[in-house]
Image (tube, rainbow, N blue to C red):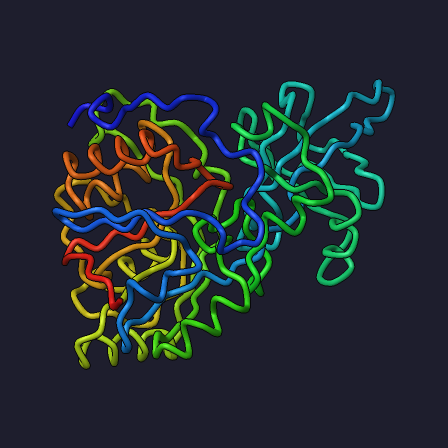
Length: 351
């Protein structure tokens, strides 16, 4: 498959720079294999059945963007920007540094309440050892760091205090992500209570979204692309909820591509099992889904792996039609934009 098969033109004014308020006020495009319905996230329960299961990602976005000064004996203090992208097995942090050419192994970077030593370097990627651990590190990072907004937002405006709330889900628990599971940003406590009252269950897993989610696909063919790896964990409780839902005839619907990628990783052998580790699963047309029956997700960038994922779920031509409708109907796109509910088995309202 050629990369340009996943391209489309999006008017710039449809790129959302701020989220809707309240969160469930976002629009929701509900699509099956043959029909489409314009709705709202606050009416999500109208499109789900009692016994369906929503799978939520409880990762917490950290303020991963840091600005500091290089502290090298006898050298000038160059300004360094570093975006944390993940923790190593030894507790060090991988980061993308800019300008990376100004750093060498052994350099110290002063980030104000935090300091770090460069332990390894490969181009713009460095490995940092911070001078604090645990709760002390998290508290200092909260002071020193900024919300790592997606590049297409950061190029248009600076992050501010409002983003600290807006770019975090209401059920975020486990810190480690440098990007939000954006489909989950539409939920608030009221919507979760409404779904529970309708008999729609929820369960949680963790996948720490990495900066690689924003990297463009540079290969000319889809098959030549290599996915970035992200750490995730799905426990026994979530696995049992998924098994019980399927056994009772309910639908398993991940909220966000991150949750979908993790449950499909855990079901790679054909039966879903508890799983912990790094996944680089690449879901593209031709993939056979083993755990997910649908997906709630925002609208994705052209030529992105996430657009390939939804094309695998619904079909390339169907996704083209869905996106064409969303553009014509002036839906808001990307991380702070509107959402879709993709149901390859068909979309039927309860009302």
